[in-house]
Length: 408
Image (cartoon, rainbow, N blue to C red):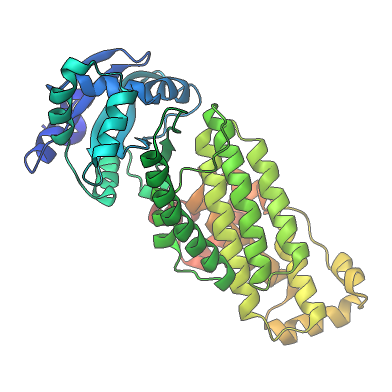
C-alpha cells in the first residue's frame, strides 16, 4: 500500500514507529473538544502537565480560527506539536507529539513543574522519575518532526517558517527559574530578530535561513491576547513596523517604506485567519528586502529618476500614467521618457512591467492567492496577458513558478 493511500491514523502510527526506533516518542490523539482518545505513552500523567500549562485550553480555542500545525511550550522547557485532522473543513481529531525537553531539568524547574501540575505529595517521587524519562532533543530536530507530523496528518509539505508557535506565560506562582528560562529564550529571540532586520537593511536576498531560524525562536509579541488571530495580527503589525524602519535605514525612502508598511498593516487588519497573516508577513518581508536590494543597485540614478522608481514601486496595484510621473517631478513627458531610459536602460513601461512581475513572484511564492487574483491586483488586464508577460520575463508560466518556489 502506498503511503498516501493509508488512512491518517495509519500514517501517524507508521511515523510514530519510525521515530520511536531511535528513541522515545509520545503520540496522543484528542477529540476537537480536548478529550483524550488514545496514546502510546504509559505515563498518562503527562496529559495533566499539558493541561496544567493551559495548552489544551489554548488549543481548543486556536482551532476555531486556524488549522495550521502549531508548536506549543511551557516555561519549564517542555515542547509539544499538534496537527489537526479535518473532516468537512472541521477538526475531527487533534494529533499531539510530545513532550520533549531541550535540556536537562534543574531541581528548581522540576519543583516548578510539580507545583504547577498539582501533583500530590505521595506521587511526587514517581512523577520525578516520569519527568526524567521525557526525551531530550535539540529544538531543530523537534521542528523537523513537526513538519513530518503535518505531512502525515494533512498531506502537506511545509517548512519551519510555516509553523505557528505558542508558549504559555508563567503565572504568579512561578519561581525565578521560569524567568531565567524566559530571559534566555528572549536573548535568542532578540538575536534571531536582529538578524532578520539586518537582512532588510542590507537588502540581502539570501534571507530564507534567517527567516526559518526566527520562526523557530519567536512566538510573537507578548500581547496577552487570548484570541489566536488577533495575537497573530498584533505580532505581524509590530514586525511590519520594525521592517519599515530597517528598510529606511537600508536606504529606502521614508515615503516608499511607510507607504508599503501602511498597505501591509491594512491587509493584516483585514485578515480572517492566522494563515493569512503569516502569508502577508512573508510577502511583506520579501518585498522590503527586494525593495532595499533594488534601491542599493540603483544608487547611480539621479534624484528625479529615483523618485519615479519609488513611486512605481508603491503604486504597482494602481494604473500608472506617464503624465502623472512627469507632473510629479516637473519634467515634460518626452524629456522624462528619454532621461529615464538613459539612466535605467529600459523604458518606463518596461520598468513598470518588470516591477509588477517581481511583485507577482513574491505573491506566487508566499501566498495562496489565485493567479487570476494576482493578475487583477497588479493591473495586467487579463490572466492570459499576465501569463504571457510572466513567461517572457522568467521563462516559465506562473503556475510552474509557484510550484517551484512556494514555501521555500
